[in-house]
Amino acid sequence: MSTNNSVDNRNGKSNGEKSVSESKANGAKNGNQSSDVERSLGKLNEVCFEDAFELTGHGKFNHLVLLTCGLIMLNVSMESVGMSYVITAAECELELTSEHKGLVNAAAFIGIISTSFLWGYLGDRFGRRAVMLPSMIASAVLSVASSFSVNVWMLFVLRILTGCLVSASSATVYAYLGEMHTGTRRASAIAWGSAFISFSFIILPGLAWVIIPGQWSFSLLGFPIVPWRAFIWSWCAPGLLAAVLLFLLPESPRYLLAAKGPEFALPVLAQMFAFNQNAEAGNFPVEKIVTSSMESRSGGFVGAIKNISLMFRPPLLRCVIISHISMFAVFMLSSGLYVWVPDILNSMLSNTSEKSLTICEIIHNKFQAARNASLSVSHGACESHVSIGVFTISMGMGAVFAVTYLAIGLFITKVGRKTFYCSIMFVCGVATVCAALVPQGGAATALLVLALCAGCAASILAAIAVDVFPTALRAMAMCVMYMVGRTGAAVGSNILGATLDRHCEAAFTVFGAFTAGSVILIIFWPKPEKVREELEKKGFSY
Image (cartoon, rainbow, N blue to C red; front, side, top):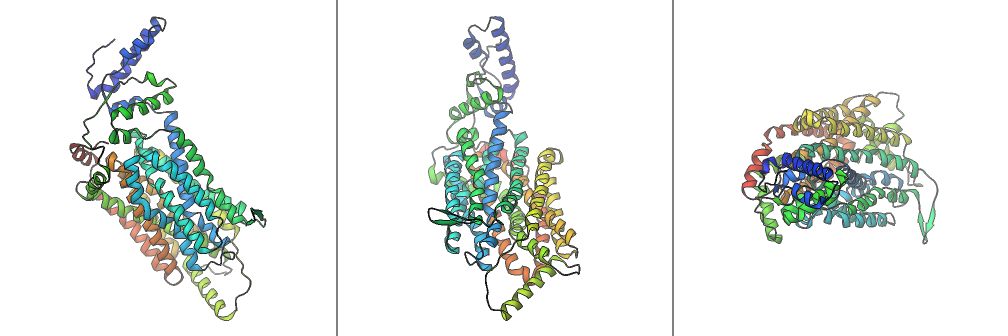
């Protein structure tokens, strides 16, 4: 058995496995006596962090992390777009106008956008798990509270506050998920986790289909509960389950290494090893992690601002500009258009014309009919009706998203991140333009669904971006990037709301052209190795 205490970091993994196997062989030969002594002899004295991380293996622990992060992403998506199914059902009770509907739809995005920078700072300062866990519980409480709203402004404020708390997880989860996997598995892990987002587009319309059309009601502490209020409760379940699972998981070891030092990261790696290998944490074949990082671990707010300024200087500046503009384009099309899809589909399904009309012609005709009716007929009893077909088509749409996400998870390492991203965005951009011009309902709906698949590209873009930002900046960088993305969603939603009735074709054309054209930016994405090398020279770890 090797007793050399000076082990080359580059050979840490192979030497560690050899030492562990030799230790086990000797233990079996001696009847497993003096196992503690043999185990200590089998340990590597000093190993670099990446080699120690490799020794933890890949198994049940990683699957649990993936499930937890997937549920967090599912919760964020449901909280962000769930109100698009509520506004029609609550239209009469809360006396919602079109302007009110736009505000309520945008409320969660406003909350997420306004606090992303703060949560990014807190995530890098206090830890990913430490930020996500309490905020997820609090967001569920506020989301339930919003279901008791008695007017549009109460609902609007509570949905903004819910968005503020959801923001803590919306991008930090990508940093946490990425840091819990090795570099070779990181892109696939983010893609698989993001697949849970697609489930929200199946679960939400499914729940809405089951709950919203109901004619029942009951009283809770004297407050009347109707279906749309209970529907809001139902989408809080994934977030609460994710909070329970996150409570059982440790903080990111990469964060602990950067923020507190290797002595804090080592126990987490040992825990990961024990879970994956069905062993005891004491069997982890590493005694000490060595690192060349010279990062400041007590810089406080001033230190954080100094680090953040690196995002706006080379070599990260180019990465920030490209990733943020690209994420804006992704969300402007996918989320900005999606919140109007139930209304668009309802218009298409309610169309009684025998002619083959385009989506834009149907929307324009509906607008003219509503305008003429408002001029000639006095207001009567309020009625709101959502076609059942909206729910079924939306669920089919979610199934398409799920297949797309799963395909990304399977093929992203074979095809390449940038190639996959550019292909999806270009095809979705072209589909957006065609969806407004095709005079056939089935084909237009299919193209509309294909256009919305642009949202799947967000996970690929996150996987591309997460590699270039050091651990001390990663949560902040991801939060700011998703803040810009959700700004795109809010901008896209409002642009469509203002233009669909009168300038529908122009709106779809601009959205499609901007989405397809944004892929040009990825050509200028720098090589991650060069960026990492420059920042590692400054003492930052990855």
